[in-house]
Length: 474
Image (cartoon, rainbow, N blue to C red; front, side, top):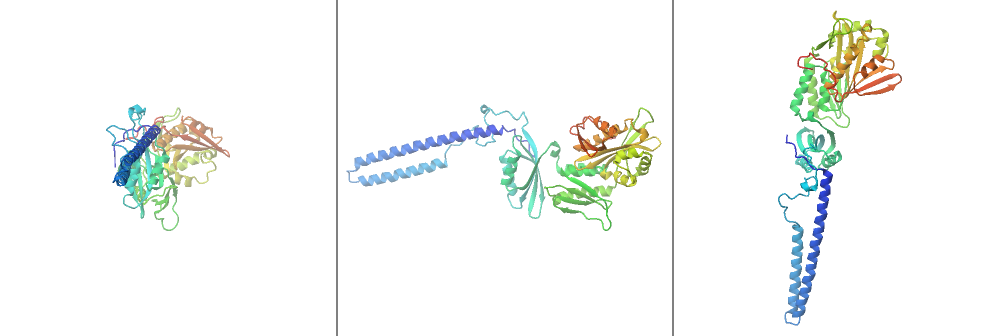
């Protein structure tokens, strides 16, 4: 359901004050009217008493007095009932209403918020009972707050329904007011978060775009799942002996089978997954399974200050033998800086790192086909870890900085909020390269280990494209 944007609303505080003044004026007018009516009753009683005194000596004096009293009482009761049923006449055209969110007249001093764009987008999710009229009640509650419903998705459950809205609301509307209105309308398990223009894409279009990204690159599957469900935690567990694990759904935990027989676990605390969401995630994972490992054939060329031209490209599982040879040529100190300890089984590390489902891996290849550097971008919840390994004789030539910039750009394009690198306190090369990214950095030190976190908000425009020559972009 798509609606045109609602008209810009006045400042809510000013509107509420204006409404209170109107109610006070209406109350004062009502008291004045009732005072006049009471005075009229006393005047009528006095007049009736005077008439009675005139005719009391007549033959029909008592009867006339009783009849006048009954008629007076009936007239007073009827007028009071009529005044309560119709306290005001209908407002004339252009008269301001009493709705606290209605636009006051221009002379009330309300700012022109249309030019200021005084609306904001919200994502709202709530559970309602499966009964006729519940959705209408909820929509009416949103309409009272001048909220426009941009889109609506329904997730049927056995005894309830989860409704997910994309809303356009007045910017001055506080989140607690929105939540309280939904609760009064019968909503429970209410969840809200600010939305942006990317959420305006309808669900079928979004699913097709995510499926396309996943089909082109295996490493995009975790990114696609995060964009589909928001803030979630993704963990992969390797295959174990026996029968492969079956997909399952249990509240805020979803398990999906991987091609190797392992599991992908998606968790989202305080917001259970619905069967509809489970079906969507399962469809993306099944697509990835059917297509097998996929790595885009993108590359770029480097010309170090001294030495032959090098090629930077995405790594594939076929690079395992060359990567093992690189590890054997690296000194123990270089390996210790990369892995923060001795490396006794590089083969086991590379099986994980070369799996594109865990992230993206870049290689720097010499003209003879050997690899002289490796870089890893590993997805970690809503962040990603950066790691670089450069062969000893190729260090201090800018390869590490170039790889870090490319990986930061890939993370920014994927919508990751932060990237971080874990280094020993004495790894000055990595520390200096992170500082030269020209990004906001945070530092955390614990027992000689330094974690440097770079914030990527707005960095997509500042970082160079990771693959300038890639056809169609990446």
